[in-house]
Length: 323
Image (tube, rainbow, N blue to C red; front, side, top):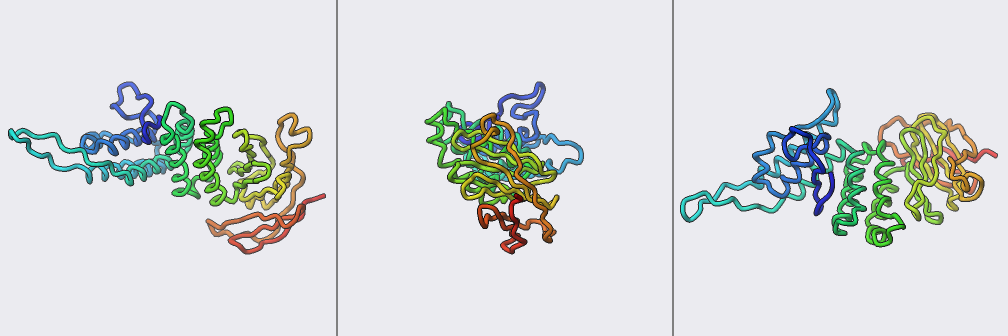
């Protein structure tokens, strides 16, 4: 799957399959979507043959079917009765403009159904130098739209989203980095704003991402690469934050009720060897945490050695780094 003129196109097809249907669930939805957006009259005839690949009991097929339904609505709304030609023969029906809104919504549903495939392909499209700049920017824009539309459900796929956004910032291709800097910066800003387990430190130009597996990933935006892997949490990272100087990182896991302190600077043996980062200490968090889903937990540095943890702007406690 790849992006051509802002639309997803198939890269290959399965032997014996109908044209335009891919072997992946997202592809089997997205290929007809592309035709629905650009040739709605013809798409109406092929729509009944759209098949959605899914495992038995897998709820993601509901999103894929919703995407196909949205495309069907776009095709039906755009189709017009055939006009008669001057000689009585049926004239070719006019091609109405594509319904971009429904197409965009359906494509986002594909991203929800197959986030790993979607992020990989949008990331690849964002760095394809043979494509016009507007197509590369469209790929990043689709990632931003996916984040805005499905903030909570994308938390397990955050590393995939971040790495797709960072791909155009490769400093070895200056023209690509320059043309994509604005779009990628907007996407990163949106991630930091929406996810308390994502934080950016301006002085060091580093981005921290806490994962559902309990790993903290550090990215260097100057090189657009993964810089450190911090392992120690045994449950999902709920929130994290760099110290203002960027030399220390605090990460909190609500499930294990622990706060970890990490060395995040560029000095020392770990930096020289490029190994995993070191944990400076662990603090037990005994304060009561809300059980309500969607509660926003946040870490704020109160001093170079202490942080405060808040939930929905209410203070839960202050904690000092172990000596």
